[in-house]
Length: 233
Length: 253
Figure 1 (cartoon, rainbow over the protein chains, first blue to last red):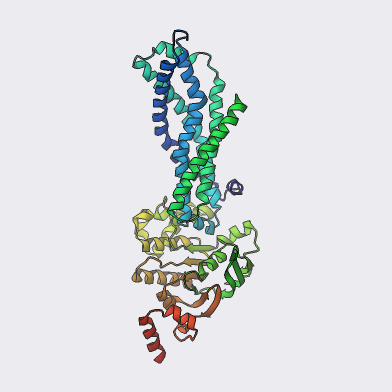
Figure 2: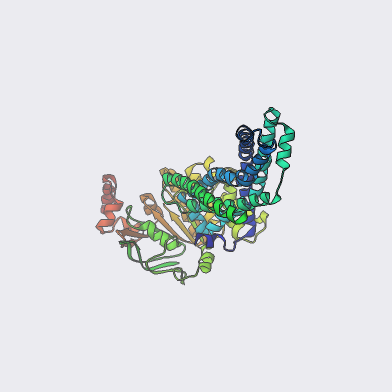
């Protein structure tokens, strides 16, 4: 029912567009820093782990770069990054809308005749879905950058890493990552908005809604990941 | 004019409103008073459509609000303004943007005209200087005045105020009361105020409805309050010894 209200016709496109741009900035651009930082370090750690645990005289030298790339493209930059974003962005959405609910700002919108569900939630869903490919791209690049950082430390040679990263490259894996992330972005924005919009009570309930939204987003992302991986592989 | 006809509202097995019937005339400040839990907030929420009454009719100048479709309700809501107990200003927007919001959303005016209209409303509540500030940078009384400016931006026909003096000092409360009363007369609006404040009752109560345990216990105006022989009303209004003595003195005179 809430989604039916969210996807109904906007009263004034200009106002929704303004909100949409604002949400892209808040949910997407403001998350670039954390995405870059986490991806860089995880990329580096994956590379070290692969080198330490997989590489042996029986394995080709490019296997470290190859497995690092596959892990980053297939799971980390889409699924794990979205789990992290569920924590950052999801709790932000739920607490923002929840606070608006308990301080009667949503009632004020309703009294004015504004479809509050659409005005508050639709720009968040569209904003995050628009920005998620950008975040996934940044994550992939930063993760590979982290792996190259390891090569500068001398743990693996840059030539072996580059060869491994390019070996049997399948561009579909990148698209798969983008497609999965669209679904995850929708889950994060819609589930968190639902928990925020339906808050009743005060600050304790807003806090609970924020926690519940992160837990449920994470669960749904993990379940969706299983199905999407099956369908897209 | 707003007419409320035999409104009932129940939550699960609890009857909160038990057949309220009254009329709120235009151009007057109509007060709903009653103890906490008496049902006055529920009545206000039913009138503005935040709650659906279990039965009964609410007529806005003859238009049945309860029976309307979503689209008609949305259109009628554009004729309403509401001031909430907590002011309910959008905290991500400046004072000017808050007042401009209903204009941005519903008017066909140019940006220049919208800005001018919002500034006129802020000037009306003496807050033009605070237009660039955010709600958390101004006092509670100023927030209420911004809420009034936002509520009147679209020239509403109906103004609703839910405990507008809550959390304000007596002097600021008088300023808010006077402002609401003046605006009501100026724009000939139908204003309904939900209040606990006895200063408001005696100062701006052009029409008063007293609710007790979901029933309409008494109706009248500010001139009839002191002389009313309704025991429940006098116990509620003149609760303190000081007020009781004041009433006795007034009745004797």
